[in-house]
Image (tube, rainbow, N blue to C red; front, top):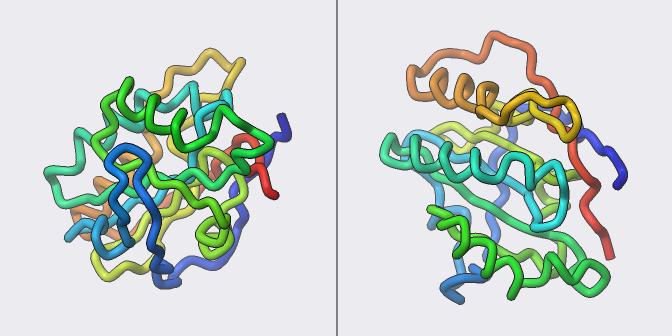
Length: 184
C-alpha cells in the first residue's frame, strides 16, 4: 500500500458538481442532490484500503450524528475496479448494505470526479459550507493502522461543529493519510 496524503490546495473553491450512480439503489445522484443545507462532506473511500477499514464504522456514526443537523454526506469510490476487484460496484453495494450506510455509495468509474476534487487517497475528505465553498481538506481523526488510536472522528467533528456554529476554522488542518487512489 502506498501511503499517500491529501493534496494540499488552496481552500475557498466551489464544490465541483458530478452525476454518479449509487451502487445500492442504482439511482444517479449529483452534488446538488446530496448537499446539506448547512454544509457537505465529500469523502473518497474504497472497500479494501486498511486506512478506510479502520474508520468506516466512524464514517457511518459521523453521518448518523450530523445528517439531521443539515450536513450532507457524499461517499465516492474512484478506484480502478478492473485491477482491484474488491472495489467493484457489486462489492461496494455489499459493504454499504452490511454497514447500513446512511449515505449513497457512489461509483466514479471514469475517475473524473476524483480528479475534479483533487482526491489522492482513501480516505480523502473535503468539507463545504452552506454556499458550497471548501473550508476543510484534512483528516477524519488521528487513527492510523498500527498506531492503536481509536477512530473517533475528532478532527471532522470539530470542523462540523465549527461549521454549524458559523465559526471560522482557527486550527491546523492535518492532511488525511491513506492508500493512493488506484488510477487506471
